[in-house]
Each structure stands twice: as structure tokens, then as C-alpha cells.
Length: 121
Image 1: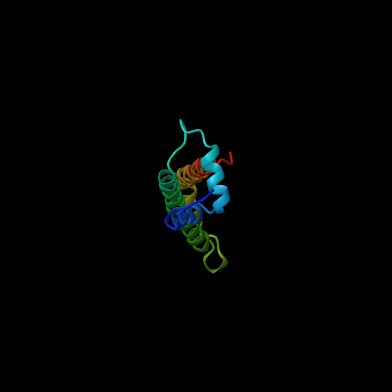
Image 2 (image 1 turned 90 degrees about the vertical axis):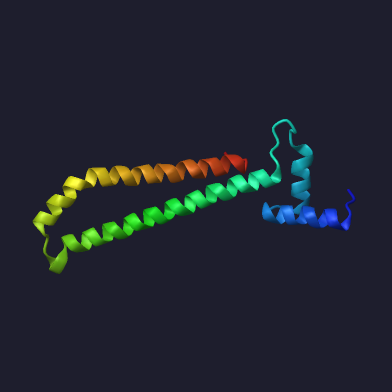
């Protein structure tokens, strides 16, 4: 195939953004079913959105990890187990674990969406 310099630069930029070789990008587009094909810009925007969602959820889960470390440190202050603090934590633990599980499921769903968009699931 022949392209003008401007066309080639445009295609190379799109291939780079999609993390594909130029040949792979052109082959994908040539073989795509036009009735279901999504514009490259729309796909990139959807993937960027999913990646942002994953990054935000990852940050929330990291904060949970930090909080759990603080709880463990508090429960074991000076090598002694503080019974009153442990009872308070155990009372709250089921709700906290439900929240963490919901966040993990959120990450799983986002990963599956990205995989489907990339044609890997």
C-alpha cells in the first residue's frame, strides 16, 4: 500500500498509541467488520477510561492495605494484644471485608472489560 507522508505519519501515530506495529494496525483495519468496528479514537478513549478506573481502584485498595497494617500494629502495641481494640475491630471486620471484596470485584470487572476490548477474552 502507498500512503502520503501525512497519511503514514497519522497511521504511525495511531499504531504507536494502540501499541501495534503499523502493519498490524493496517491489517486489523482492513479485516475489521465495518458494521461492528469502533473508531480507533473511541477504542483508545474507552481503554483510557478503564485504565483510569483501575488506577483509582488500585489506590483505594492500597489505602485499605495501609489501614489494615495500622490496625495490626495497634492490636499488637508493645507486643501485647489489646483485647478491647480487638473486639471493636472484629465487630467492624465483616463490613470492612465486604467493602474490600466489592473493590476487588470492581477491579476484576474492569480488567475483563479491557481484555474484551483488546480482543483477549
